[in-house]
Length: 199
Image 1 (tube, helix red, strand yellow):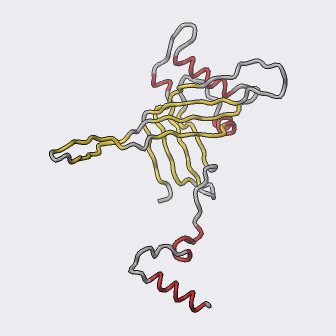
Image 2 (cartoon, one colour):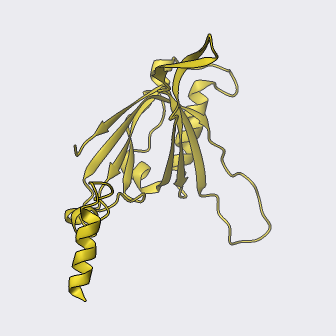
Image 3 (tube, helix red, strand yellow):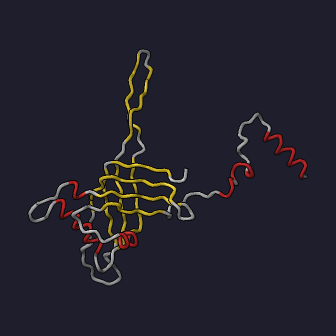
């Protein structure tokens, strides 16, 4: 029986070179390389806004539960219709801005809550409408993609991040068993850079 299986395998592998990669030993085993996992990441602010209260890296990282990065995959360009109804396409650039939403779980010290509220206040004070200059209000951030050994394999640097939205839970309820800890912070950024750290 083993002889027939070997014969079939040899016939399949010698089929003019097409689909020869469909072979576990030579293609899919790949020396024990693993898939990247979505739960191995780190998000950090590498330069916080200058005039905004920042709770520090330790609190920021410990209370950050998720990060959803929205970068457009669109390649911009134009097209022209030529005589004979031929369509000619030329690509000219790509979007380099985007947004990121960060989900936090805050504590009784309200460090994250105060951070997001102070950022909004420094953009435009609720009472006086006074605001600081853009250079004092923007942050540079990084999203680090890690492998199973927690080594950095990809770094996305986000430039000139600024707050878009962060609503605080200030409701009152009639019973216990609920909390105010969940905070969603949405930021926009002007430009990003992607580094491939393991190639």
